[in-house]
Length: 365
Image 1 (cartoon, rainbow, N blue to C red):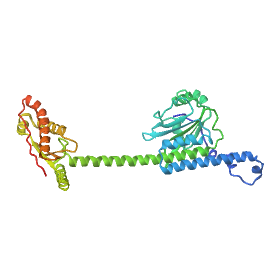
Image 2 (image 1 turned 30 degrees about the vertical axis):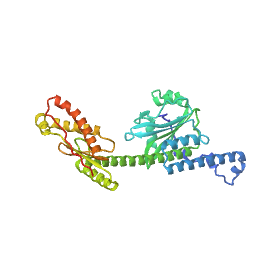
Image 3 (image 1 turned 90 degrees about the horizontal axis):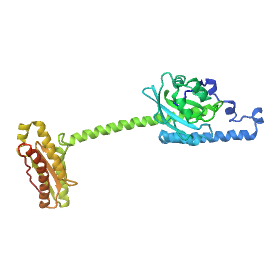
Image 4 (image 1 turned 135 degrees about the vertical axis):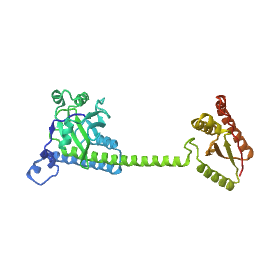
């Protein structure tokens, strides 16, 4: 991705450097001889770093999004460990591809942006995975001269980056990506506190893995919800016309009648059927009959008000349940439905199909 480092840090290099060991003062001659200002500076830096690690750890516990955590790392740690650019790439396609996930830089323009990808096979990024150790490039310009085909190196050089340290991201013993620390100066990562980088990489790995688990749970819950919704829809709707089925429209009617009784209100029941519908099936075929039923249901729906309910009772019969102040308002509803259906069926009649009409009956609770 951002670079393909050329030096693998040996195991002994991962131990604390003398500078790191000096951060924990001991009563020996070397510490007594260290200038107080130098010791206090190291202790101050260590305190700042530990405080920022604690903040990142708290974010992980709180379940913040990985990009929010990476933003916090970028903004909080520049004062205690050196980098001018921070990037994160994640492995995809069973580890065969590394794809840029997030990056921030002091550069005016990012040339390696989220979404940029590279094949892992044969790359030095793959060697980082194989060794499980961080690697560095002290001078990217020299590296690019030695590897002129490295597209990622060319792009990162265009951002003004001159050296880098790359840590593998490992979660539950499995590599999941990389964390790239980059500097605009060559040789930045010689003799640095590498444990701090590895510790940051470990915390980023944890939050990414946690996020992935949450995403998997969310995906599973969403699939279950969608499956439930599909089953619920199938159980309550007519498969052909997609209006309420018989059982559901009857349940709606019962609820409306009960509510009308409690409130001393009215409810209108419109029953519509298509005359001589059998002739449509016999002369034009069942597919044409299905199309006619869908057309009728759409025409009825078009005439309804908000709160009116339409269901298919069976065959060519439809039921409308609606609130009604009196019988006259129910009759007005029936006339709107009749006019809408007549307009729709007029096209059918022009095409030579048998005539179809809609009758109705209106009741009041």
